[in-house]
Image (cartoon, rainbow, N blue to C red; front, top):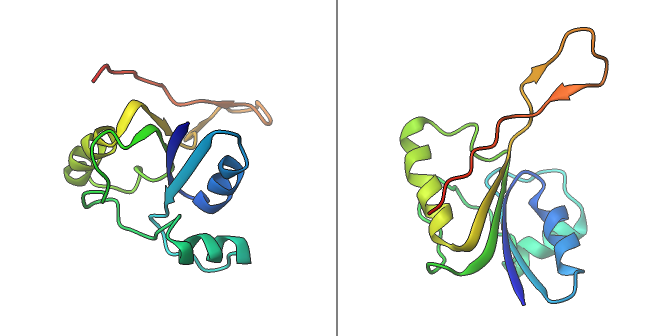
Length: 125
């Protein structure tokens, strides 16, 4: 059984898809205010599967609670002070790893539709 935590923008749709997978339990944390969402997302929030929480503060999960933690577009707005506290906390709740996705910020001139991805750095914990 894989237990996955998704943190970031559009968490409801990611968690909904993960819940359909066999032998996968998924939870999420929505760090932003949700406004125009569908009924499925509202139901996940009401059930506590996707709580709305500020990730600047410690997550309410025990150490090594999840097989994998996936973070997408949630760290770019944090100041270095909060980033230094948030990253270790996200790693604390993960057993196998921490995956961080960020939207590319660099587009090559005259290369229509081509973008250069961000650099990925992997550190052993």
